[in-house]
Image (cartoon, rainbow, N blue to C red; front, side, top):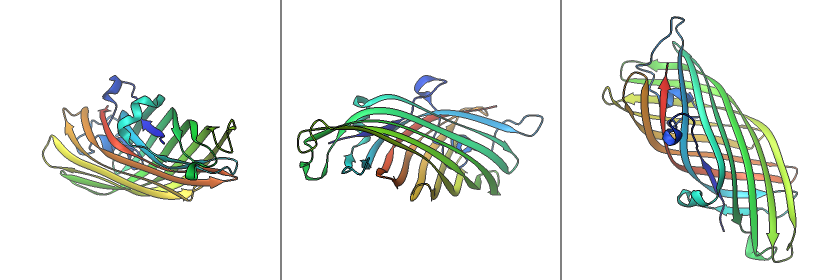
Length: 263
């Protein structure tokens, strides 16, 4: 059956949440680096809460029990999400940048076990938190395009409650969770078609606590002014973690929409 994941809820302009950003140079992804405002110290800042409607595909397991399979599209997330918050920010000085991305979701949904023998249905309550802190360096930049190399650490904290109904595990309910850290690295870039329209994207991959941690996105942006721009696109975030009977092997993916504010 189904389990649904992430959706961004922004501060600042409610669901006007910020653009596509994350793994790689987060805020610049939302706000192109070609025309930002600059402080007297040379630092430029961007904040970007964002709105992400993401489906979830993969397996969730705990205590060595058979994993619950998840295969959900982003179109039904509204029925399953209890609470969500996503936001990012960046500080940039010349070619150097420091950035962060925070994602928190709490949802209730249903899943299935292999062949339906151990249980007819499974209720799933899941709370997940991830936070990325990284640095970047511009390896290419001119008036129309820029390319940054980025790297950082992503902290994950996931808690799940599985409640089985029917089958051999009828009435069984278990809570489990895990916290781990992954190192990730990659590229992010922006290309300006016109002073207003631009294409932006990024890709990160790594691991550590997880066997695999990756993040990729592509979006089309529009610059309203030197301080405000909007982006619409598509993002996918995957992680494969398994330790001491706890399994979290998922891919979250879906449309993303947001607004970046620079100062």
